[in-house]
Length: 383
Image (cartoon, rainbow, N blue to C red; front, side):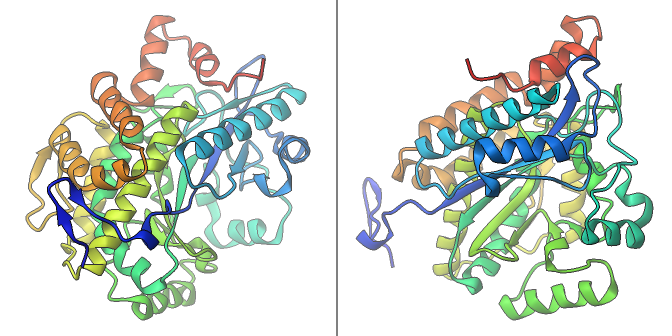
């Protein structure tokens, strides 16, 4: 049991190294002249790999997308430098093919589907099995991996994390526009993604064996082709010793992405600590968690959300939920010097809104010209 002093918990020496953290970001490729989505990812990814290294740039289902994959990091400075490096290298590669690298959950202008699929067996099999579901899948998320080496702990920690996913979505929404129209949502990306049969909140898991059984059943039914298609908001990674949080839209800036990833690391740390202390994770109904995610996608950080991290799930102002989240993660953030970075970002969200609010402000400033929104979002070239 961790001793407690007047100043807070005292952690044993072997637990002082920051847990590993890594980030995957997906981007829209937009034509530099029209600002509409374009299908040039094969060329851009090849160029990006020469700048960044082959493991750090990958294609996605749609040829209008590029994904960057960070190295494993430990400190906030390492993580932000890595995100900046990846964004800069991918932006340079995009420019070589007359593209902008745009961090938006959906394409502001143009359509990303029906996409010309990459000529890979997996993607072709996806199209055969799921049909029209692949047609608008040029949507862009931010996935955060946090190192948790014990599989049983990781599965049980997911139970503590699942109720916080609606709030994390509300804080990171960045996809109000799609194909030239305002959807009325803060995160339209999450609505498109939720149509997949194995997407959404994870079920309440009774341990690693239960997790494996559920995954096997989903694959056996055809709802997923393999464990990698378990598109839950949070899950034990299918191939890494990590917990993967997949709920967020890709965010406008590297600094915001860094703060969010550190918040996720703090929240995972709190969840693992709760598992080790034998604390019960409230079992919010799957449908209520899904409904809360819809509210978050619709309204972002305004209004209320069901408190799905608690037993009663009462409707609670988002600002109050942020305060409750902060109480849980602040000891873990302070331990590694991450509290100011995360605290400043959360304050800014409550004051100015998320990327969705920023996109709409730019559109209003430029009399509805969504080309200006694309320009505002596009990752700047180095120098």
